[in-house]
Length: 290
Picture 1 (cartoon, helix red, strand yellow):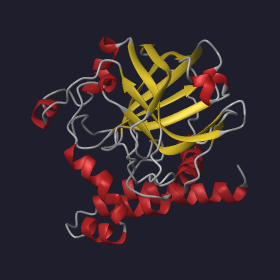
Picture 2 (tube, helix red, strand yellow):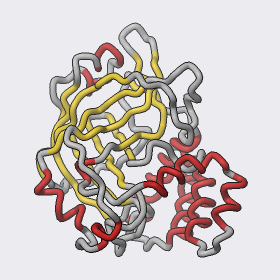
Picture 3 (cartoon, one colour):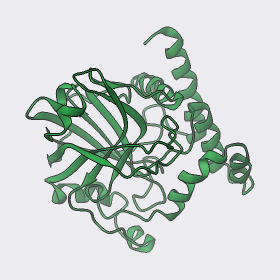
Picture 4 (cartoon, one colour):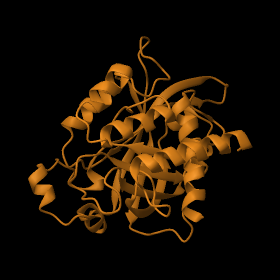
């Protein structure tokens, strides 16, 4: 990472920290979380789409971190917000959320969004939406979302578009998601808030082992490929393999998740948000370690 990118990431993290009131030692948006270990086994179709090593090896160890996005370290797992699942499988990092699209297109717009949603001013969010109408789709999903029963029972989406390059050098742009093989119904808000504040973390061990299918979602011809705020209308999907998480286990060394840490055979997203997130993740790690 060059010095200009580092400076951009550090500036963005300073603004995010101010917007979220996060302590220096805390994550900015994923403070509450828990770890699991397992393995990824590719599907027969995966190697036809990409030459990536994770799709060629019969089995690759996996490290995953489930998290609750909002609320800080003292929040409640039943509070409004989405859940996250970051996983490292070989040379591939995937950072995913339960929302299928993101609120904004850049890191700077994310700072604006957080300021508006946390300002306490009822006019702030409508004003933000007037300037950034692209945020309406994700906000609509967030308003309809209900507390989840378990980290293991919901679908997680990588909101960026990745290129899968095959042995002939042909690249297909896809969106990736992790779908549970045993989905679970959501809870009513009052049910969730009656549970312990960290009920998702407490519950995880009893839910494991749990399996997710890594799926490539193919776009329709009219879909906007590289806008993380836009839904796709295409319905064709290809299974890429199964992620099995066998037990809760914190790694001896925390993997430095990076949405742009990708193996050969997977092309990086072209949207600005992915670049801003990558720079911010690195800067946030330096901030926590300082």
